[in-house]
Image 1: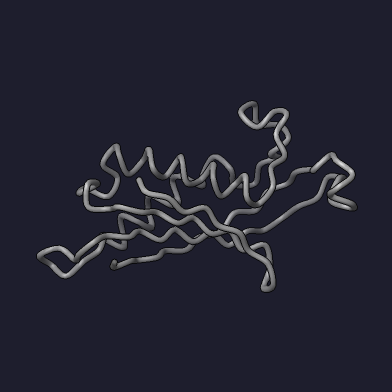
Image 2: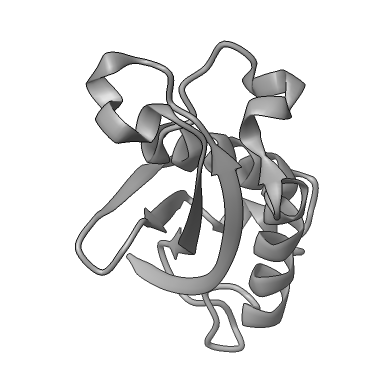
Length: 131
């Protein structure tokens, strides 16, 4: 498979109210580097997996509702632990919908999508599946 990956970032606040999270139970901030990898079986007639500009725009638009937000105050996240893994899946589903709506023009070519969130230089998580 071929792939193109684009990158952005978000700054959020949240708490993880369960003993398993230790000091992260309290309100804290996080800056995540977010990568979106788009996989196709082949490159198109122009030698592309996807248009990098469109992919970058789609990722930015997907992340916009999360930027500078307290995730504890987002109604859709009520009662959820907004872990890095949870956010990977949320961003994946939002991006999958955006791809299906034509954000990348030729949506049918993208077969897989991987969303990675880097918490720091030593820890990251991702969610990957077919679209």
